[in-house]
Amino acid sequence: MSEIRIYTETDMTNLLFTSDNKKRIAERLQPLGIRYEQWQTADALSAGADSEQVMAAYQPDIDRLKAEGGYQTVDVISLTADHPQKDELRQKFLSEHTHSEDEVRFFVAGQGLFTLHLEGKVVEILCTAGDLISVPANTRHWFDMGPEPEFIAIRLFNNPQGWVAEYTGSDIASHYNRLED
Image 1 (cartoon, rainbow, N blue to C red):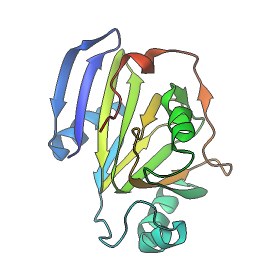
Image 2: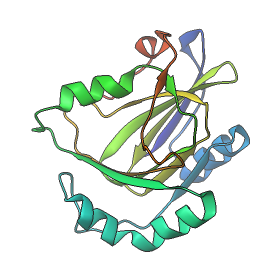
Image 3: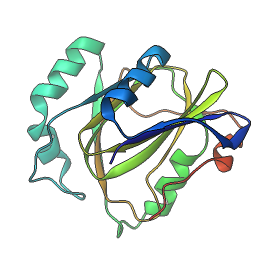
Image 4: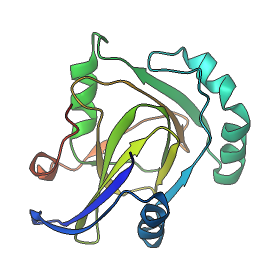
């Protein structure tokens, strides 16, 4: 179940808002410039699915987003708990970072915890299958796939190089929630 939790940036125990209602999640994110919507998912795809298979299942939606946002690069990250580099990949995304372009993710299967640091708040969005989230360029954020990942996400970027992070050096991410089993 998708969920949003909003905290002050200085105190993780100060929960300002929470909801698992997708409409309310979208309403809360929209004024922050965050696009959040739901797509229909292809039932036959599960974590570990081949990238070409995932792309083919969502090609019309990918083409629409590319045309709308000028996205140049599309990739698929599909991880299972037995992936040999799961720990390295998790660590890569866990530190606060920004991108010089928008980062768009559509969760085909499974879940991931996307955390944004903006306007004096920390906004956690537990994204599940069917959720699309678009984070504007230069937004401080981090992502947790959990210690035993089981998810597929399609990622779209304006940058032809794809996922390029600029780490902030802040340790704020270590003070907030992780996605745990």
